[in-house]
Image (cartoon, rainbow over all chains, first blue to last red; front, side, top):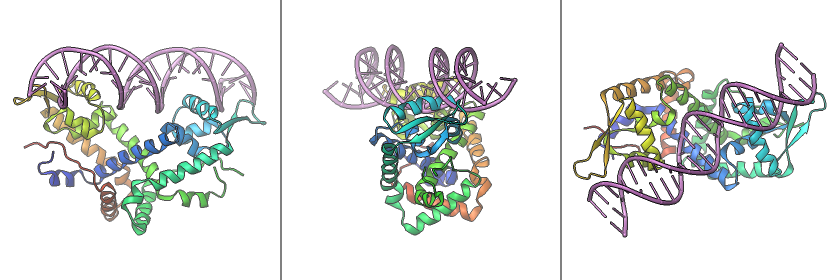
Length: 150
Length: 150
DNA sequence: TATTGTTATACTCTATAACTATA
DNA sequence: TATAGTTATAGAGTATAACAATA
């Protein structure tokens, strides 16, 4: 391993740290998803699914192609976590609705992600608040919301 | 998703923010890698390559299987960015050495990652220092360095 | 016998293009 | 004609297992 790594580390700095945290969070997310029998994109879809949003909207929200959503929703639907419902106004559209079972799993998933996160282990409350504020700034223009439930 | 989204968002909090930053950084890394004609794992490998580390060590460092390294190094070697050199002490081992061309690209890559990062755009110096300190704590036990150059 | 690297193979994630039903 | 969703297909990322050479 090492050899004058302090010098190298300080050069790499923040961008390097963020990349590493990125990897660690990705692995964390993968592990937890797996505990629920979900692939990471399936878990992401479940987490982002609203009540009655068209698939198209989920695709935009997840930043992927609409064709990919088809398979994702197929898998979620096969496990009764999500349903496709017709839109009465436009018969091309299929509205995505989380089932009761899906909503339950989503909540358990949320808790597991929180509880087992490296965050919980290594930072105290004040530090977490600081970090949250900085990340929020970083994400500036990002818009979160999918169609929300009534 | 759950109506009354201010409540939901604040519950999601930090874990959610980190996941989003994770995605954004991942996209950023992908874009920049592409500018250099590298796939993200190729870029990661180049960034993590030292002077004379066995492939096995890179595999551990990248958290992937050794068999995957073969193809990665093939691609990098085909572009004269990296060389496989025999280890005089153990003829099973191939030492990975970054070429001059590879070192140059790695430095340019580093600069591009820094310059075009969302970090540069949205945070000032003090905020970056804060963020770095928090992330460092988060990464606690993580060990960074591969064999460094002499 | 254990270890380094390679090959063959397969699975997941994802996009592009062509298609259908509807608007 | 344009849009929502589907299907077929292909490519990138990655692991597992079997293997060769060396230790």
